[in-house]
Image 1 (cartoon, rainbow, N blue to C red):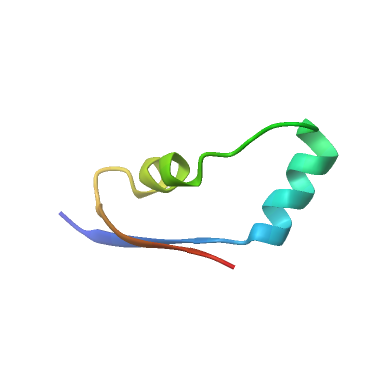
Image 2: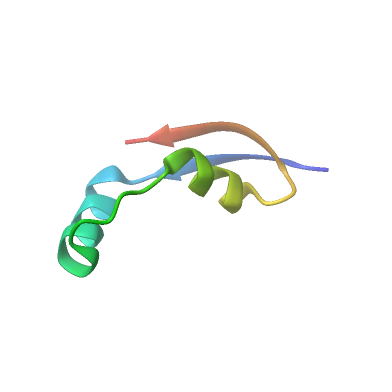
Length: 47
């Protein structure tokens, strides 16, 4: 089993939400787990 780190570009995510989805909220912990899949999630970086 591998390990992974997730890097989230906060400015881009906020832009997409504002332009495409209006009032949507994102659960970044859940998103990180989904992106990691079966790999061990080491850390999520939000920049």
